[in-house]
Structure formats: C-alpha cells, structure tokens
Length: 194
Image (cartoon, rainbow, N blue to C red; front, side):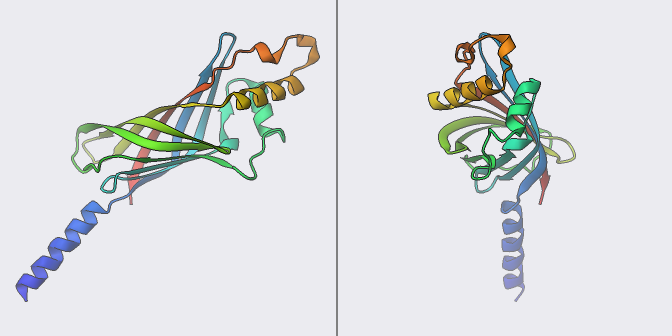
C-alpha cells in the first residue's frame, strides 16, 4: 500500500511540474518597418501570450486595432473603416520549440522557435529567437524577436490608403514611399505561472 501511495505521489508531482503553463495578457509588442523616407513604428500593450515549456509551445495574440503608431496619420488610418478587422481581428503567432525547464532561478535560456505568424489572411513561416530570463524569485520574462515579409499587394493596399487620407496639398505620390516589405517585431512578455 505504501509503495502504491509513493508511486501516486511521484506521478502527481511529475505531472504538476511538467504541465506548468506561463501566461500574460499584458505583453508588449513593438513592430517597425523602415523605408528611405520614414520609419513606421507601432506599439501594442494588450498582447496575450501563453508558454507551455514542457510541451514546447508558444502562442502570442495581439489585436490589430490595439496597435498605436508613432505617426498620427497611420493611427487614423488603422482606427478608421479602411482597415477591415471583422474577419481577422488579431495577429497570431504559434510556435514550437524543444521542451525546456523554466523552474531554475537566476538563469537565461535562448530558445529557437519555429512557428507561423498570421496577419489578416496571410500566413508566414516565421522563425523566432526567444530569450527567457528567470530571476531569483522565479519570475519569468521572455523577449521574442521575429520578422515577417509581407506581400507586395499589402504594400499596394497601404499606399492606396495613404493616397485616400493624405491631403492633396502635400502633393506627393504614396507609391514612392518605399515601404519595406519586412516588418520587425519585438515582444516583451512578463509571464505568470498558472
């Protein structure tokens, strides 16, 4: 009987440790796209993320309308009716990595992640580099770097929106803005244990 109890305790402890989930609903994403004329930079402070270290899964969700751009005109474009978010309201990243142990304090782990970034109706295989820092109290913080290459048609869509909203007094072509097709994304996540 004691042997059975010992086996049940070991199984319970093992399942509890390996089944831990880390999450946040207050993550921060900074995204940027550079061009020869201007840099588009946006922040989103309403990012939900979940990390399952034993299973090797990373999930990040960010509402499109929650991005705040440095350029006020871009904010107006994104919050207006020109950007459709009914069908695709958020950007998602789903990634997989080799299982890791996040219970050791005062450690920093670099994790390569293979995942898929979805924005609107686009899906891109996007590798990410995640640096996980665990402080002395066990608080877990993750920093994720990835970049996404958008389609040429999306650049045209953006230029068409700019043409519609830029006052004609400025007298320049939005086609010559030279928007970079590569979007750089940095995420900072303070994760809580569930």
